[in-house]
Image (cartoon, rainbow, N blue to C red; front, side, top):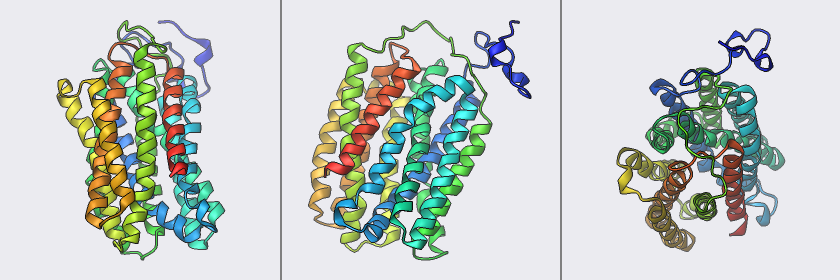
Length: 366
């Protein structure tokens, strides 16, 4: 067994030995479950944050043109985290990188709670930025699963399906938070606690510092598949951001209760990740290019319905269609990225940066 001096760290005997073929780098079923759990917890925390952030922004924003700043900064933070996430996973391993991302989520949840209680818009923006950093790290769960499992793309879709399982717990958490008051603070504290659980789940992952070597797929990062996945995914995230910003605001203007808005976000979350679970089980049902085109068309029509704001029912239904369309777009991008190639982590970081940058633009453009 070879020893890599560059990986030797005091107190970390597990890092001394170089990666073995099919050894610690490869993900088994338990590791894949931990990745799905970590992503699901992060997605559930995101649902709680997104159900409260627009309302907090409406109350605290000093001017109308700053209403979308906290949400946009959340997305900017997620975009800025993409390259650090890829670098830290290579340099320090999955466990340390994902634990750092979850720690930022804990800090962001607590800071936004402080901001909401003190009426501090600047602190709300900073806390949203930190929550975005945590989201940027969490999004890499799907790429790590697709690269590190023999199931390839299906493994990444299984991780996305973890978000669908998490959606079922959102209404119960929202009702539980309502027991502690009518403000947004309790839900933000619960979101911080969910990131703390994601931190614990991250500590159970293997280090896997060295790159995995499960199969000899080419490292194609400049093919038409990569370009199509990035451009189509960016448009999907642009439309998703616009819908997720305006949906809760429209429901609030329609006099929907906070509990109903939270439940609508949970249904939206289920729609976001449910199709991915179906595609993981029956991949032939979701051809990549067709999935992207159908998803984008559905999102365009649903966004128009959200902006119209005709009724609580129409806005809620449109948000679910936006979520399902976004899921189809992401199923298509995952298959284009990972089915026939193994893009390097920096290319995957560039892909996520484009997606999240487009999402930030969508939050500010409408």
